[in-house]
Image 1: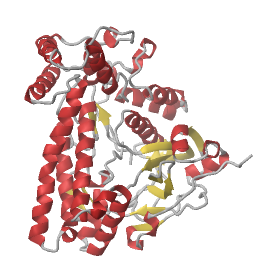
Image 2 (image 1 turned 180 degrees about the vertical axis):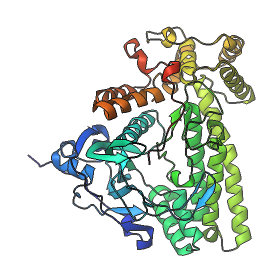
Image 3 (image 1 turned 90 degrees about the horizontal axis):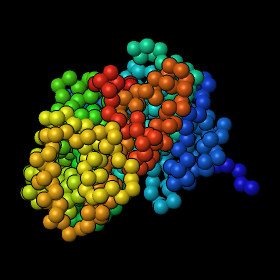
Image 4 (image 1 turned 60 degrees about the vertical axis):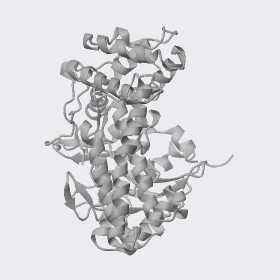
Length: 494
């Protein structure tokens, strides 16, 4: 019988020049305890689940020991944060343990978040309170199930130590998985120093890792830029379709792989409001729900600027080509958003009439303060006669202001070539009944932090793993918050 084994590392980023990172081992913790291990993700990554849940695995997940082949580093980057330039940041509370290649040949980073100080901690302790660890586990795994490109959570552990923020809190460490942690801000760091060689080395690495088709393009670095733009347009359209607000779209929180990362002050909307802001530090509403597409394009423009010297040796020609690519974001985003919103309504033909119908619905939802998720879920149920599934009607009814809109919608559906049953099946797939609502996340955090009770956390993770399978017994997980349960602000957890 073979012995349980840990990750098999192949660390390509650590083979880049030394100025891309600092070699940094995690800081040990006093008394770690496993909260949850993601067995399905471990199996995908080729990591033995028995090892992951063993004492040896726990010590690695906590940062107390290193698995064979691990080459821990903290990466350096810069950023525009809320529009202001910060020339040097970096992994201030995270350590990249290394990279693994999954069963499909896809490469992934394994990173510890909350693993102690690094050269980029800027005076911080490098630790994470337990609450943000649980929040990121819940939301990132829910996003993955909903089909959103995202970083994942492999495991969460307690540290047996206290973290001091506004008060004393128990500490935790999250093991985060992403196809890479390379950010727009990583390119900005080197570009700001006129280190064009580093920009080229980084671009070549990203092309090999994420955009291999760009390598054979006439202009590989322009093709890289266009690839990142396309993925970000799709990603943000997916956020908007789900009513998800990232909360802190700084350039260091946009991965060039096109995955969602950093689940600090994020939130799913309850009541639909295009001006919705949850982040406690976003007082001006820069990263409000409706602003996310524009901010995405703004961030991508900084990536384009960093790539200019390697796009073309003629600066004016490089600017012209990059500008054309950035201008193309709008059309890409609008197309992706229109397709996703029409799919939510069972409409296959995306045209001006369908777009007008979507706009009218959202305006009426804003007026009524209608719950975003349950409005679309209820429309999916109304798209055809009930075929045996449980309905959310007992916890949510459509507001009266939608009555005239419903007539327009039904008239448009009658022109569709698919059957009502086919449309409904499609709508049920893209209109979940369960999302990680803020008040539920706060509930599980409070249970864990105040009482050491992780059962609510486990139940929520398991319920969110089947977002489309509504059952009345689980109604509390689908219901909007009562007034006293509403969470109006979220925090980054640093």
